[in-house]
Length: 384
Image (tube, rainbow, N blue to C red; front, side, top):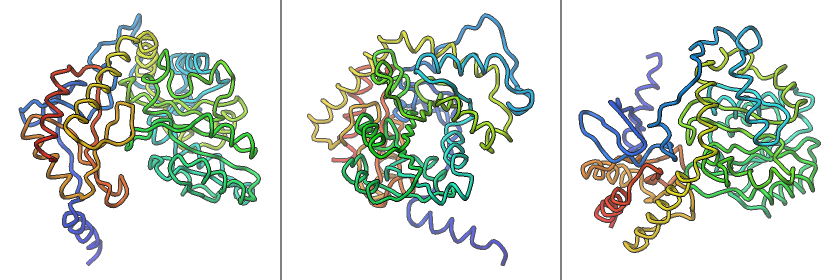
């Protein structure tokens, strides 16, 4: 029978405890979430600073829709203002907005190596734990894809030394979304320079949270003018908005305008969202109190977890995974936590590697000390 494989594959996923499903969320903040008329403490949100609970005040109300592609009539003043603000803050010549971080990451890599003749002499070097959007972009590009061990500078150096590619692109995340650790960006920049390579950083989980003024993983590099060649900022995490911006040189952005199919054939970002996002970013730069509260919550969680002998990964960010290994055990633990009023996600393959299923805990400045104590107490009961 035609398309019988659909049922077969669904049955396989179910048997492996890997079947995914959606929940209808009735309401949600950075601290709580309500599903099926029950309210839980929310430890699964990426709203790290709790800005999603705060209204944005605008002096005017831009249109909701941009009506067309940015290359037709969709590129309006609010989008330009957001791009220029990010360029000015982060030290780049030009930027371009996308409706999602996934689209930004994957399409940039595909477009950069769209020419087959050029791609024959090109290679993409990706950290093995990079986000799916980055990997998918490389898989659909015409250049060779070379993976290096997670945050392993020596392994990357060996890969670069063996490569005969003329055009080399190193790709990493600023903060890794499933492990919560950070990339050695300075070492990556040094290595890129030594091998005449470009460096691309996806700072989805660093922007807004890291740096003295929340400019992310690369803030400390701005003054020295030693930034990655390509920086991707997304707005769906600490900014509590949606969409993304790709930053680079003017020539690079001009090239993207010619060859990036996602950008060319998508309706431009809503002017309404662009205006809200810019206003939120201005607030984030002054949100030192929220960043301090988040860091205090991270320290409290790690300390309490250590007291209860709960094994954590090597992360100092808001992402605090607990690896249980078995998908079935992880799913069961997630359900047991819901019974205790804790909502967090069971992350299973293929999102993470086989036998590394985990409870992905995300902390927010909106959480109270009592919330975190309740979380650790519930975890101790479930996974001990």
